[in-house]
Length: 410
Ligand SMILES: *[C@@H]1O[C@H](CO)[C@@H](O)[C@H](O)[C@H]1NC(C)=O
Ligand SMILES: *[C@@H]1O[C@H](CO)[C@@H](O)[C@H](O)[C@H]1NC(C)=O
Ligand SMILES: *[C@@H]1O[C@H](CO)[C@@H](O)[C@H](O)[C@H]1NC(C)=O
Ligand SMILES: *[C@@H]1O[C@H](CO)[C@@H](O)[C@H](O)[C@H]1NC(C)=O
Ligand SMILES: *[C@@H]1O[C@H](CO)[C@@H](O)[C@H](O)[C@H]1NC(C)=O
Ligand SMILES: *[C@@H]1O[C@H](CO)[C@@H](O)[C@H](O)[C@H]1NC(C)=O
Ligand SMILES: *[C@@H]1O[C@H](CO)[C@@H](O)[C@H](O)[C@H]1NC(C)=O
Ligand SMILES: *[C@@H]1O[C@H](CO)[C@@H](O)[C@H](O)[C@H]1NC(C)=O
Ligand SMILES: *[C@@H]1O[C@H](CO)[C@@H](O)[C@H](O)[C@H]1NC(C)=O
Ligand SMILES: *[C@@H]1O[C@H](CO)[C@@H](O)[C@H](O)[C@H]1NC(C)=O
Image 1 (cartoon, rainbow, N blue to C red):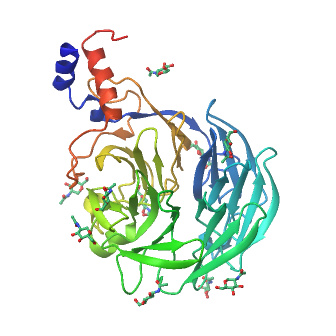
Image 2 (cartoon, rainbow, N blue to C red):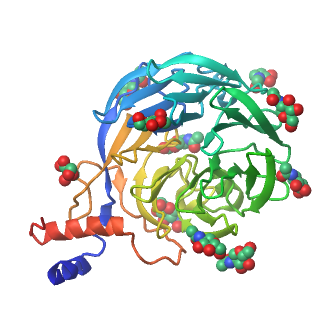
């Protein structure tokens, strides 16, 4: 044990040097190469991705890393004056409904299409009172409600749907939101809904609105500065990660990611050098957040070159674990399987890319054959006071150290 400990101390950053994830499989696009996608999610080991270019949801079995089919019946790419109009195209946001083997998918006609996952067919359509797309979603597990945003109509709104009878039970408009609304996230700790609002007159850097899903009322507003958040995700109790968007780079010349304690609304960690984000997902198995920073720019500067990446952040310490070079076209979306820990990112020039969490690591820290994976960027620093690496990462360092020492620890 003493030897093991000293070996570990001698190689304290082995697991972090290149990062624990490496590219494993690329599933080429079909039928056409996609240039516009939206939300992705993993439901019980199966990955689903909204593809606006092809007007389908891709289905990938993560146990074999193969595309097993697709879901059709969406409005597809709506071309306006030669380019794809995101607010009227679909599919968009999606949500797996626990206990029902159903997937809700937002479409460009303001409806939510209900997919039966045993047949992968649309079995119902819930029309919201909006004209443009039904988009981001969250699930209230206490009240069995699907919460769906309508971000692109003249006044942004959210809709509460009872998943037991597929009826709209409430709605709420956001006349103060001057740049739409983004991701809603339900908090299991207090049973309330948190909504990412990128910009209001009162809070130009954005705010998180706290909503009571039993009264359909905003109960509290948590202001944020210099963020203009898009994706948000809960990690550990009361911990909310905010993916600050490219708007904050353009307005404030700052690229960063924030972690908020929603009890106080205080920012508890600022991860510098990673911004321009959209999708974000939390994996409780690794205790990592995965942020799709597809519109990041070099040096967090509005004149900086495009610097798209996927950022992996340790929720325990609020520090950057790894960055992976992606693209500024389709890499706005990120999903993780909490069972296999596989990470999935759509990349326009490649396809649907699956990254594996390696359980061993090399001393150089550079995963072989994966030039697109880089280590902790020098520019990326953190102001989090957390200093202890999570036990999870330490175990990888331990295994790595044992391998370096040429000793079998089994
Ligand atoms: C399409 O282009 C025409 C000509 O430039 C313009 O008048 C029209 O407003 C555009 N339509 C939309 C929906 O942007
Ligand atoms: C995943 O599978 C479990 C066990 O079969 C089931 O209870 C659960 O509802 C499923 N989750 C979803 C989102 O379908
Ligand atoms: C939306 O909510 C308002 C009350 O806030 C209600 O009057 C209206 O009927 C609701 N719309 C729908 C389509 O449920
Ligand atoms: C809208 O903004 C006004 C002025 O800042 C504020 O008093 C009000 O509470 C806001 N309403 C909502 C629903 O956020
Ligand atoms: C959040 O803040 C509350 C109140 O200060 C504190 O008790 C709690 O430990 C904090 N939680 C996190 C995850 O930082
Ligand atoms: C956290 O929030 C509380 C209440 O809003 C405030 O009094 C306190 O100073 C904040 N703490 C830090 C460290 O910012
Ligand atoms: C800006 O970023 C680029 C690429 O990361 C780097 O080479 C350059 O030195 C940076 N410039 C400044 C002024 O920091
Ligand atoms: C995306 O990045 C490429 C360089 O890789 C750049 O030429 C292009 O302008 C960028 N597109 C946008 C919309 O920023
Ligand atoms: C689709 O993408 C693949 C992989 O990048 C590329 O080889 C192929 O030429 C592309 N096809 C079209 C029609 O652009
Ligand atoms: C990781 O662990 C699994 C299960 O223990 C094993 O099958 C696999 O070969 C390991 N992978 C590496 C790269 O060591």
